[in-house]
Image (tube, rainbow, N blue to C red; front, top):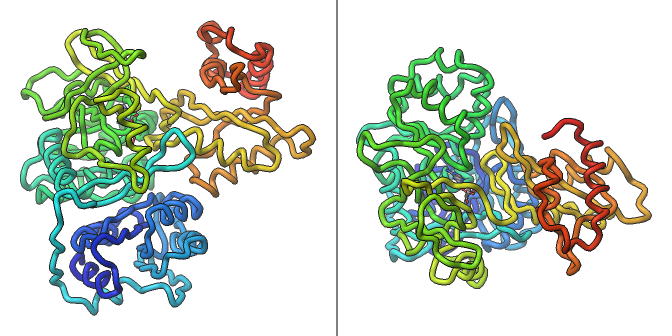
Length: 539
Ligand code: AMP
């Protein structure tokens, strides 16, 4: 499949170095598309198939892709999504795109234009041997867009040899992978976890990998464990948000299926709370499978901090990522940029030396790469996360230090949402924050100031704003709460004090700290009143 597709891409003019955008659900053809690109030396740019047409278009343009690979439709959790239609809408604003390969994930035909290529049909005409391109170790393997603290997503660049080595080693050692194992990472290929642990890590180790296209509760909350039984999965790797959701449905859905094949359970994407960790360990893993809480990010390419590898009976503390992987030197910094050397301390998590899997740059914007990761603490790679180092020297990740929030393990910059909300003709300005959410980890709360003479108000406006966010970014980025306020709390220099807004939503008025820099302290009282009206119960 990979070779035929590689040959097809070549025949249709895709050359070494050309970036190909892939907008597909996790399915064998999507993996073949990634592999085919890698084989002919064309960097791939996988865009999560839940992103809207506009978000996709922005990523296609930034990556300068002239080729897009998609599927007619996607199938997820009993719903059909119109992927080809979304691509059609996206490429209208991407003049450089001159061909769209369309795979048939379902049997439903879609309208094809002169620009579109029926992928499977054309692949059948190709030879199944495809000469691989010779690549330099530092050539680009792929771009992957992620959110930062500004409105523009950044295309992180991963390279050939270092990334592959790091994905393979972490896959092998963190999960105690052995030849013949069946590895079940349920992340979507549109995120870095899908890249490193559904595709590159397991395949580099010659493993069998499971692609998961659905949701944890479709057709019922036993879905994961039925799959474990049916496919005899040895390592299961998922997100805390799904674990928290399944926990609420009760143990019977887990007990119903044989999970004796499981040896290691992994968690990724956000901090895992102790209750979810304990349930995962005790109920899913019957207390016999180590749970590895793995900390890493799109930028790091692979797992950087995890309980394994370690001695077989070494301690694993619930909810802690614990130990650095080979070659990773974690460092905690105080706000003045001094390295904290003692234990039982918290600080900004940095990494003190480069490692093979690290992103090399941001596509088209190396200055932003330097500014984001290297300048905050010169000489160190700054992760954007905060961490605690325990008395024993173990690491626990405490969350983002910047204006990036994590919704169901998906990263989104508050500035990206604000940018969209501010585009409404009714909105003067807005401030978006994350709040602690039972299932999603974090939910999204928007404070919106309307233009003085605006007539659209209330629910209509809120719905309008939600639709805009869903259209411009994706559904997961829609605010759960939108509070209309007269003004936002600002410093005298005009900076929005998001800390104050977070404390309002957390109902921690005493914890607001120093408000003396606020331009107008009465704004806060007004916001508290509005919040209590909007959400009677604490969130
Ligand atoms: P992404 O690049 O989209 O994979 O998001 C990476 C971010 O998710 C990190 O910077 C962390 O804020 C968060 N994250 C990932 N894994 C963990 C973990 N095991 N514990 C806590 N936070 C995590």
